Image (cartoon, rainbow, N blue to C red; front, side, top):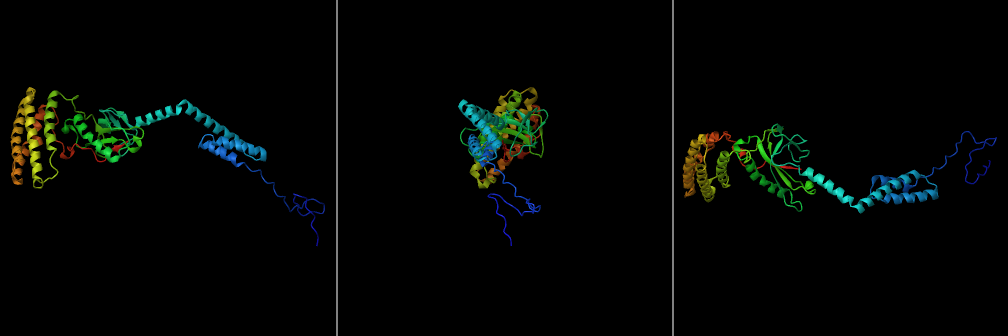
Length: 375
């Protein structure tokens, strides 16, 4: 047996060769690497992410002190992290002390508000980036109405300030578009059957940036359908004779729209009698308006015949309003309804150069397309 030679303190020795040099079959252990200071790494990461201005600076200073004392690596990371964090801190202090943050926020908010409010006005025709109107609308561009376009604005109005009222409240408020439609397109007959009214209303997200505008628009109900030409037919585009006729027609249309919910007379005779009274009054007012207006020579005869027809219809509706039971209601009601059928007004419309093709009854409800859209 033999005794291994003693090792020098702190050293490692392998088997000795006869000549005192290390054996070729033994490799000395590599030296232990110098660790990187963790605060230096943290300083660099925090300064890049810009989490909290100043934190990276504090971490960098701590790292520099420890690196000097312990001889650790990470000097470059600590210097870069401290510098970036110091710049961020100085910038933050400058913005806070000069009020620049408020200025920046106001301009950002104004920009988002301008985008959210769509910047559309009554009479504008527009396209969207999506190529069709859907639940959310972005990238609206005003285009000439003469060419093909996705939508035409027929009205706008603002909702009251305050907290977001909720989707249902916004939808209910958007029903005001119904009235604005009749002021913009006074002649329902001139609105194509594939065109519907809808609205672009504030969403919860755009409300936070000050969006309060409901935009009422016409659009095509067909897939990827477009509009061509303006649908505007109001007091700025129609002549005095056309306006007088449409005002008289609107009086009757409004009365007809007040029919009771119960379709069968037997289910609500009092309601149907009250409705018949309103129609009778509207017919009397309409006939009087037609006779009071000074029509052009080419329109006098058809308008006089129409007024006489309305007088006859009024007598039947008045009789229905006094009916004692459902059977007594139906006979005058049917006669009165026949006298005011759409085709009865075609000669008068033709004489006034208004549309002469009656619209589909399903498009005359005056409502908006289901759902509406948000910005």
